[in-house]
Length: 444
Image (cartoon, rainbow, N blue to C red; front, side, top):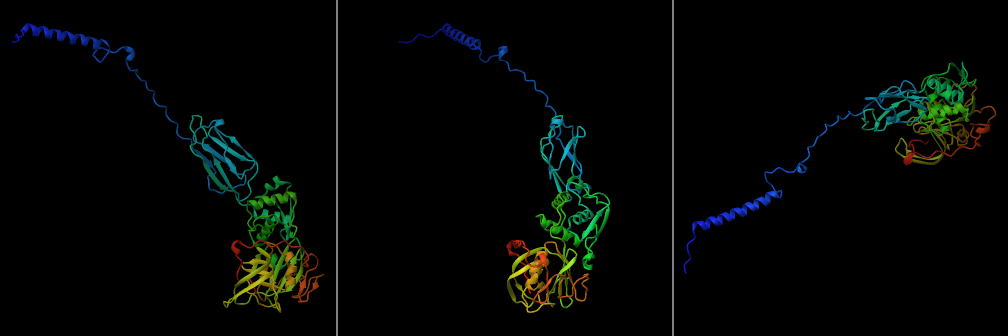
C-alpha cells in the first residue's frame, strides 16, 4: 500500500519541536555555571598578587690585619690590629685564636677596629699565627664569609743579652757584672731580651787559653756563643743546634728566674799537631790532663780550626773505606766525641802515639780517652792547631806531662785526678742517627 506524501506543515512542526528542545538544553547548560559569556562570581576570581621589591644585600664583611701577614715584627710585644670594612657589633666580634698564646686582651678601638694588646712579649724568633673564624657579624647584618689567617715572625733576641745570660749561668768562660741590679723573676727577664743590661765582662778564670780568648766577641754570633747555646740546650733537653730560637729563650728565662746554673763547669780541648802531637784538656781555669794523640795522615787530615762537639757515643762500630780503597771495620771504638764532620776524639789502641796515624780522628790511648770522657759534652769546643802553632796554654805541662795532682799513666801520658779519673759515671750514648748513618771515615 502506498504511503501518503508528507505535507510541508508536518516538516515545520518537527523542526519547531527540535528547536524548542535545543533551547531548553542550552538554558540548562548555561544556567548551571558552565563556560559561557556570563561573568563568574566574585569569589571565583583569581586574587591579585602584590610583590615586594627585594631588599639590597649588604656587601660581604672584610678585614685588614696589621701588621701585614708575613712580616717580621720590630718588637716582641707587638700589638695586632683588625680593621673591618663595616661597623661590627660588640657582641658580633669573636676574638681570633693566637698561637703561641700570650697573656693579653682584645680592645674595641672603634666600631670598625679591634686591637690585641699583649701583656707579655713573645719569645724571640717565635712564629706567631692568627686565625679569625668566619661569621663575624656587622651591624647591618653582613658576615665575614670565610676564615682569615695571618702569621708573623718575632724579631731575634739580642746576642749581647744572650752573652750576659749564659755568662750569668756559667756556660761561658766569662763573667758579667751589671751596672744595675740583675732582673728578678720571669717578667723582669722578659723585659730585657732585646735590651741588654749595662755592665762589663771579665774572664771567669785567671788563665785563659789564647786560642779560646781569641774567640770571644761579645754581642755577636760566634763559635764561643754557639758552643754555649748547644751546652745549654743539652742541659735542658732541647735539640742541640746552637740556635737561640724561642724554645731556647723560654728555657733560658726560666733558668735565669730559677737560678739554674751550669752543673758541668767549662771545658775546652786543644789539639796540637806539632810533634809530638798532644791533646790538652782545660777545665774551669786549668789544664787537668794532657795526652799524646794521633791525628790524620796527609791523605786524610784532621780538619783544622775550632768546632763544637755535636755527637757522642760511649762505644761505636766504625766502618768505611780508607784512601787506598780498602774497607775497614773497627768494632767497639770507645769514648767517641764528634766535633768536625766525621772527625772525632776517641780511644784507639796503637803501639805508639804522638804522630799522624788516623784517617782524621784524634786518637787517644783508651785510658786517657776514658779520663777525658766525663769532661766533654755537646757544645764543648775543640781547637786543632797546625804544626808549628804554639798551644798558648798558660801553665800547661809539656806534652806527655801531667797536670798538678794527676797521676802518670803507663803510656806516658797524663790522666786527670779527682772526678776526671774515669770513675765518674757517664750517661749512656745517644742513639745513632736514623738509618744507622754513621760517618764512614772516622777511624785510625
